[in-house]
Image: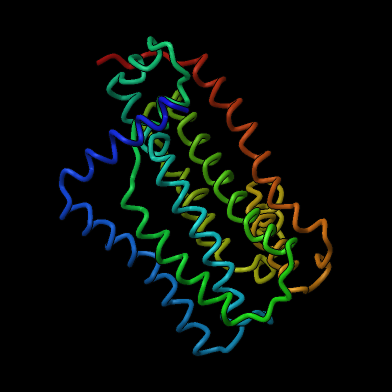
Length: 260
């Protein structure tokens, strides 16, 4: 942990060397999800509701997913850009160091400008909560926190899987964007608006449904998931990262240097 925090400190200071660029990029990242959210706003301005979901209910779903993604991509950027380490044989350097490769890859790159996305999503979350009637208690507060944590772990697991494929393909695959950006775009709406095969895929394969749809139903007191067990479903997102770490370990064992 001490080494990881040291990585954070060094990279944060290095990015602040160009403060104007850092601030402008952070502002730019603020407006990226804002444009997406504006499209949702105008959609509801036109149709009023979608499959029984109101604008602020969808806004709550949107904010949790985008907050999770923003935090994950900020601290997992090393895995997202891992193909560069494989192509230039930089991973060889990591292997000869007496430290865990996961910690080293995590510490190889951080994108603190993604905090702009986090700020925007947090503002949407607060706006949504102020306009939704939820009977709050300790369990529902915990559910909201679990949703965020579960989302972070799921997106982080996807980034690790994408990096693991680089051991076999060398270059990163655009296919992974289907499971990162694509998953984010789909899960910003409640899964009930999609066809069954989409719901099943994002519940049992990429389990984003268990960190937004099921606990969201519990928060709102709707449907078949209005029970205390639904508050625990986001914690499955933490379990999702375990097989991802095993895939990473397998990939490391099969790694062949690409040279320099």
